[in-house]
Image 1 (cartoon, rainbow, N blue to C red):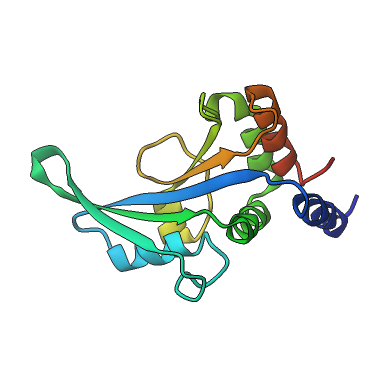
Image 2 (image 1 turned 180 degrees about the horizontal axis):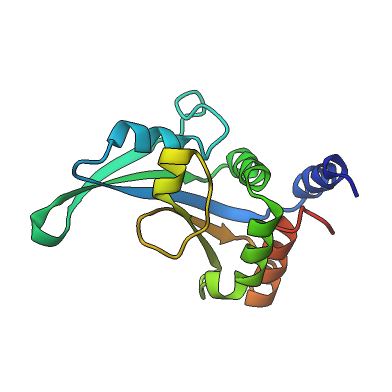
Length: 169
């Protein structure tokens, strides 16, 4: 099936079925890092203007080892149209190898609250513009709360598989 047909199926299906409850994107910005560039890269995950869509970019501060200041940047998506655009955009930026890896690791990326976690290497994204899955802590974090019905791990894993399988039924 061609990519456009898969996207059409996804768009048609997702108009009637809610796939996710909310999405949280976050990244840590350590002292000495370019906060403006990291903020820009975080905002690139959402394919719309945050200000126009009235979506906030949260900024807070924590302190790490040796009392080093760490900035925490967060975007929370709660409206269906925002989450749908985010998922479509994320899916279009991932290659087939990355999608296959996500499907393979789906069980370990899903917690008991049906939160699905993805991490993308911060250095690769900031320096090369490349989304690269990672297990390291120096990353962009994405938490997707899956809207499974019935609310079960099995149903959530089916939705995750469907989302990252080119939206095939």
